[in-house]
Image (cartoon, rainbow, N blue to C red):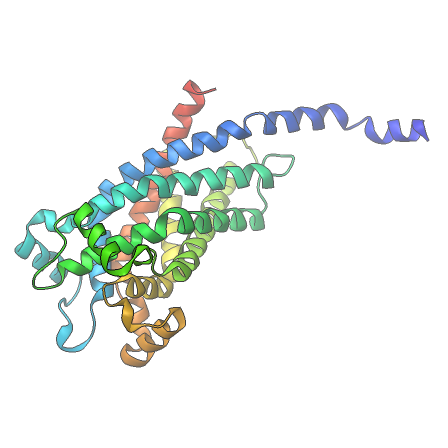
Length: 315
């Protein structure tokens, strides 16, 4: 019995223990590095890409009929700059600056931790592992950061659409929202936000990790150039846009100042379909496509660069 047991285990103990130790030892640091690197990445990325987010949100809030304000992307940009100056395209930026740091920190921190737990003995993720680790990252960021941030951002942009905007700044606007709607006023649309972020990150991390693996060709030590990371990120972003823009439209409507018109996620979906038709679910696709492709490309490039630096200076 004993010889048989030794014979069964002898080929595996040292390599197995070595691989496990190598994977387990840095796992805590990897998660912490992911959180810090994600926070820095979020701040840099949003300053670069915010105008496209602003235009996308304005077009998604636009309705048919007499209340329609814009004829498209260019018209929205021209009217915003004419009425509010170039900085009008940055209306609500402070909200995303405050929110993007914890959002991206939670996203990458969660993904790195889930990835560490799901990796096989070769240090790679299976296709399903990439998908579900990404989904877990998206759900976590939706609950802990994105929902309140997105709700406030949409309300701020929606406020500017009125003839006499009420919000004078971040603190004043948030205090008014809470005063009038309670704390739940900054936590609207949590279900569509979870659906959006979960599907977003599931698609993006799946595409990104798959593209990286294909580029490496089975060599885990092969470096992926930043230009390739950017290209993979843009592709991942495009896939997520075509996959979940309808969810994004419903989320935006439910987080706007007229969210009271809808009883819930399903009711919002039905009313948009009934009153505006199925194409309404793809409003803002062009600016969102531009924004997301740039956003995801920049995010992964910046994140990879920061993580490379951390690996050198942060053991």
